Image (tube, rainbow, N blue to C red; front, side, top):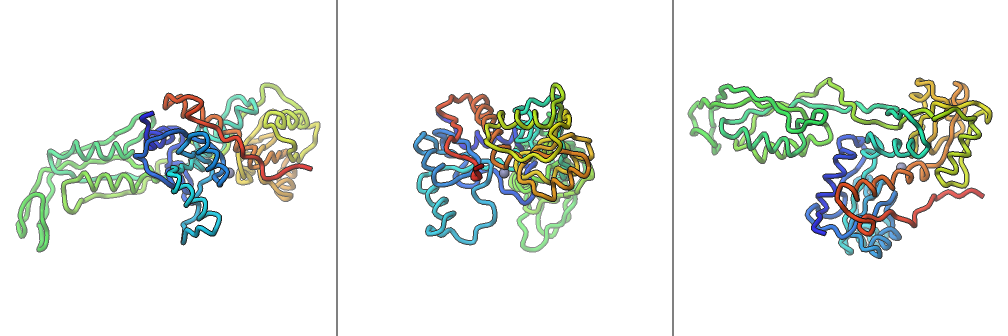
Length: 369
Ligand SMILES: [Zn+2]
C-alpha cells in the first residue's frame, strides 16, 4: 500500500502528541523501523502472543496497542521468559509495535473523551488539564544558514503554538569567537578573533520532543560548537489532560444510569457506590485506573465518577463528600476507545477495513460469577 510505519506515527502524533505522555511512560514506536512498509495495522489494548498470532493471521505487520509492550527498561531479553519470548517472536515475524498510552489518555479526543461519547455526555470538557512544560530555545546561526536551521527546528516539532507550526523569531547581530588549539572552525582561523554576522533565532519547544529538536538543530547547524540557550518557561500549555466531564441530556437516577452504562459498555457487571435513587446529571469519566481523578471530580461538583480500579476507601471518601462512584473496570473503560483509533487511522491514511483491524480476542481478565 506504499505506506510506511513513519506515516502512522505522524498521524498518531496529530491525534495524541507524544509530548502529552507522562514522564514515566514509554510510547511511540517500541519495536521495529519507521521506514518499513505497512501491510496492515492491528489495534488492541495489550500485546501478547495471541495478539501477535492474530495480527499475522489477518495480514497485519503493525500492532498499535494502548499499553506499551516495553514499560520499564529491559535488563535482558530471555527467550525462556514471557516478555523475551514475546519480543523475540515479534522481531522474528518482522512486526512493528507502537504504543499510544498516556499520550492517548491525555489527548483531547483520547480515551476518556471516547468513553464520554459512548455514555452520551454533552458539553464534554477535560477533567484534569495537563500543564505541559515548555522551553525557549535560542540558537545563534551564521548569516546564510538561517533557513536550514529554521526548517530543521520546525520539522522536528519546535515552534508549535496552537494550530501554527514552525514559529520562530530571528534578529540580526554580531557573534565573536576565538578558535583555540585543536579546533577546526567553520569560519575563521585558529588563534584569530573572529566577528561574524549571526542571527539570534528563538523558538518554543515542548518537553516531550526536546531531545529530538536539539538533535535536529545540532545536525543542521554548520558550527562545530553550537551556542544555544535552553530556558524553562512558566507558560502553560493546556492541550489535553486526564479524564473528562460533561452532562447527561437529562437527569437519571444513579441506578438507571448504572444500568445504561452496563449496557453501553457491554459488560456483565459494574461496581456502584451510592444511593440508587440519587439523581445524577453531571458525570466525570476517566478511562483505566482513575482514582487520581477523585479530588478534581469532587471539586467540580460532579454527581458520579465513572472509572476503573477503585477500592473500599475510595468509595468511603467519595460518599462522605456526596459523590457516587462507578467502577466499570480498567478493561471496559479503555477498550471503548479503541474503535476510534481504527476509524481515525482509516480516515487519515485512506485505508479500508482489511488494512486497519480492531483486535477481537481480548477480553476483560476479570469475570463476574
Ligand atoms: Zn490502562
